[in-house]
Amino acid sequence: MTGQRERVMRHGFLPCFGGVVFGVMILVSGSANADPLKDEIAPTGKLRVAIGISPAGGAYWSTKTENGYAGVPVDLGKALADQLGVAVEYVAYPNSGKITDAAATGAWDVSFLPEDPERAKKIAFGPIYEVSEATYIVKAGSPIKDFASLDQAGVNVAAVNDTTTMRGAMAHLKNAKVTGYQTFDEIFNLLKDGKIDAFALSRDQLNALAKKLPGSRVLDETFKQTVTAVAVPLNHPLSLDYASKFMADAKTNGLLRKAFDNNGLKDTPLRAK
Image (cartoon, helix red, strand yellow):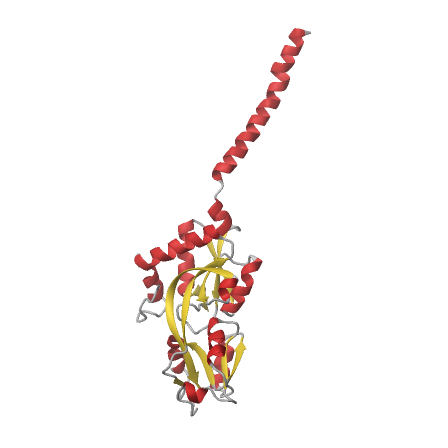
């Protein structure tokens, strides 16, 4: 009986013990291969970059093309994904307010968009890569020449809905009415048709818009500075640290300058902070 028990120990229990060891090895191997950064910043296996779509251009807006998307955020997002070693996926929205609202849903991983205190309650911002002046363009034939003549009862001003510029215009204007619209295109058509008096946006974008609207005028004064920065959803500390380091490097290694140059901004100086 003793010899039989020894044979069972040798030939029956050892395979079971070997299975336990094999299982432990798999767990250890899996732990060793885990990547907390990628699990946080690219949980789907791709880097999902949220972009705002509009023909306005500039350092924030992107455009839809035959081959996908183009814009400064598009180039920066692709470079960030390449550095991480994952594919990029663009998630398009009509404006930055929609991007902000979607952050809590887990629909995107990183974005590049204007920052303000209200928005910072919903998403976390890294380094600023663009600083621009916000002002107004007035419709063709308008008698409005400055902020004083703009800020009058009965004057209708448009802005892209739930954006830093819209909030800035609402704080700036005490008498004129500010109305938010979902897309740049909608406001462009309203201004072209003379159905609104003015449009609040960054000066660089309005100067480009004025070329498409003969007789329109961009006002000389500035009512706020708009800062644009890399952003991630709240409570993603590894993502924020990595994206912040990426942007700091992009300012010094020529990547940011190249992204501007590739998207019609060769004459735009880098105004990063």
